Length: 229
Image (cartoon, rainbow, N blue to C red; front, side, top):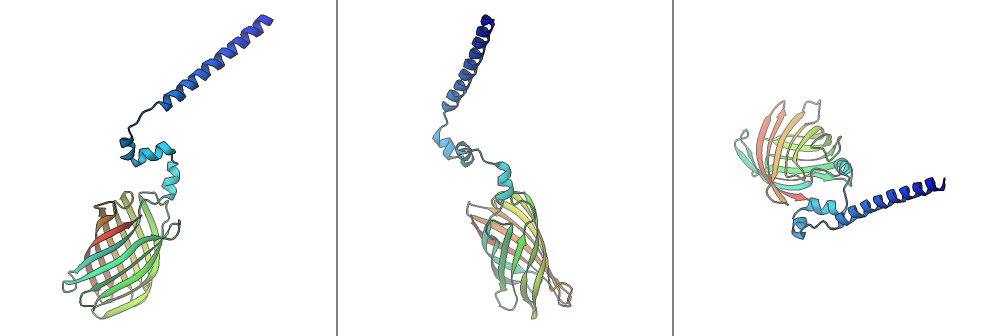
């Protein structure tokens, strides 16, 4: 009986010692991994993972795949006597850490007769890290085209396709209506795309169409954008 107990104890001790040696071997092996500092410095992702393994799902849900950007650009209106103008604005200014963003802009022809300005709020319905997102748009807009003026509540929606994170490349389409359902209703369609040329700046192009019962106008814009991180 004592012999069996001794054998059992020795067996358990042997198994415990073997497992301990295995764990010790793994730890030693992990500590002796040698990575050149230059490789780590050139790879922010590797450096981040070595410090702490990130929660990828949490990042997708909470870290936006796009940034706020300021824009300044040049406008050309082929449907309005080939008029030229300028446009300035800010796109997707985040309100805290929420899915709510603000977008504002001002556009005018060099003659000063034609103008368009407004402020919109977008609330993105999908996690901010997704490559595709949609948002209802609510805001206020005032515009004047060839002495035709209107202003009022601006309602619609936006679809955003992120081709590369952090505004490196994206495409968006926004459709809104000023004074929806009234006699002076104006529909505004905007197709925009942008591509980063540096880590802080990008070039974007925009096609905008404005339709009302009494007038139609369109313009093409080229913008230099400053990415705010």
